Image 1: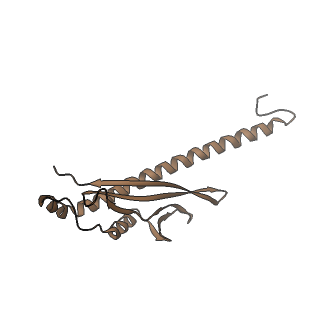
Image 2: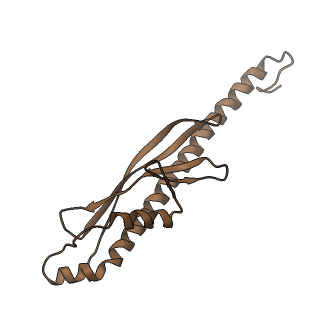
Image 3: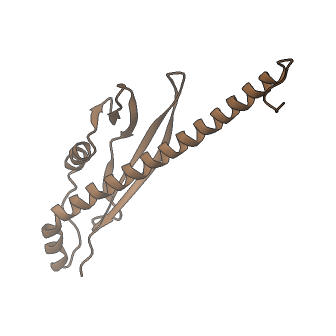
Length: 158
């Protein structure tokens, strides 16, 4: 007889506890992997959108460099937010950009990115936001796991 069976039936409790413990460990590992993947994908995509914004304004930025000052007049924050919303296929509601899964539940949400200069009026831009991933158990959201993120982009001349 093995560790998971007996004629008295007493080791079925042990088997259930072992299976439950393994399921809980696997659940945490899968949640961690999915969360890290979501964070990395979102961070890469927001950086790509910020780089796109810098490229869109590169002529204006290049001309200001040639004039001896490396700044642009203003950052179009609404353009960046609408670009990130369309690039990542995010919906807007309750001051969050969010995405829904196949079951209609929120997969993740992010605060509206705050786009600003890294240093006053320089060509180094940064976008800061909080990415929130729901932690669910038995179909209910227990709490939101929040990760503060900052992406940076700058224009360099060759």
